[in-house]
Length: 75
Image (cartoon, rainbow, N blue to C red; front, side):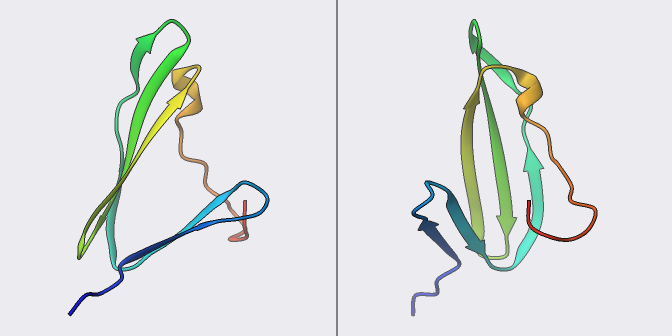
């Protein structure tokens, strides 16, 4: 039997929403410079059913940081 463990929605405002079940750990890799003004980093969600990896590109390593919302609301 197949079990859905992640669902991705592409919203009309060009954002992506993803629901992931049974998260065990979240890790953010070390930013790596690919070229001048081009950096890569990987975010991995470790779940009880496997992993979800997101590869990201940005213009600087400072773009890859985890922002916490103190009031518990949406960003």
